[in-house]
Length: 295
Image 1 (cartoon, rainbow, N blue to C red):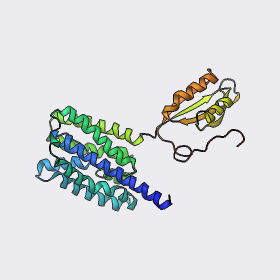
Image 2 (image 1 turned 180 degrees about the vertical axis):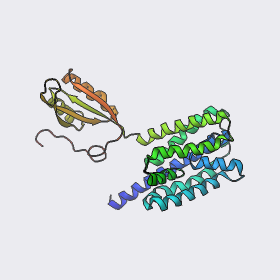
Image 3 (image 1 turned 60 degrees about the vertical axis):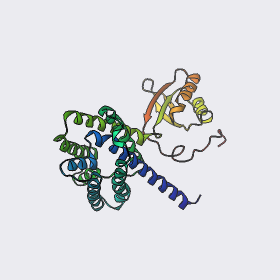
Image 4 (image 1 turned 90 degrees about the vertical axis):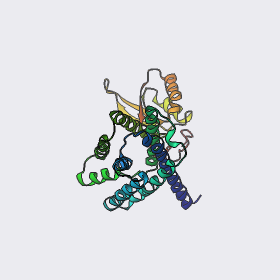
């Protein structure tokens, strides 16, 4: 496969991921958020607030809000940002309008708690799929990024300020239960989004200190097909020079590696840590097979 074909395949994957994410996002809003009056942040929240007071089409309002914010972002944040946001900016309102016309989509459940749970889960899944592609859902996230550029504060803080401002605007026409369910949906959305973004990327890091470090290294490399790094250390009590074995493995190999280390040295000191992402040889690059000391 040529470099051009690989790049095209990668771009196609990104576009499909962004489209799928926006489709799920639109379905969640059409099926669970709008029918039950659950408050939410972002451009959708602005749209819900505007259409409560002005008899306009929700999708059209969201489209206008997204377009205005997109132009602001393109001017203030540059071309690269615009390219990662343009699909969601204009596709999401279209998908939302299509989703709202699906027969029976607004009557899937009469239970607001179920609507909140499923709405939050689907919102998190949809946004997570978009963010996972390195793209953005646009909307009020753009305001947070613009504020970050000029005020130099944390993006997360500005995002919370903008979102809670939008949520606050909906409190005036929502009852207390709708507000509470809206906060619950936001929490579920955030948790699921983080899970989706990191899905398949989290790994386990083991740091093993043992007098039999060489045997452990050999077994890990040869039998477990796991990369290992030797770390020179000094013991705290005896100040003795020693080596530790550092390796990063997928979750499914944890038991096997742990069992191997225990059988070699049941007194080995092992720390196990979950890490969010790994890049480099054996993960984002092809692994080099271990063939023994002759290498």
